[in-house]
Image (cartoon, rainbow, N blue to C red; front, top):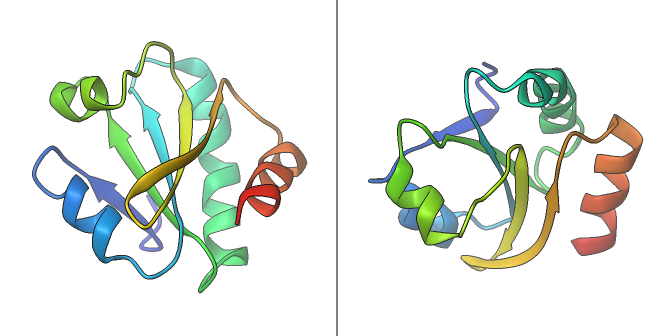
Length: 108
């Protein structure tokens, strides 16, 4: 995983969401999830392209069930854009790079 993507856990989720100055796009994913693997390289690219405008983070729902339950994650990948620590917009399922960029652009 890129050093531009933050790994979230049950322990650091709240602080990262509240302390990050830009909106944070969180990818709720799992190792066994095929669509999650499909969008991983897209998130890597977008992390570089949106540096300073949007932070990209990933949370493994199998390893951090409490955090996933907190946001009522029922399907993965689920992408939630947070502003000031609060969920602003959500997309479920794998998206193409252009779809994901449009989602981010329309919500930041």
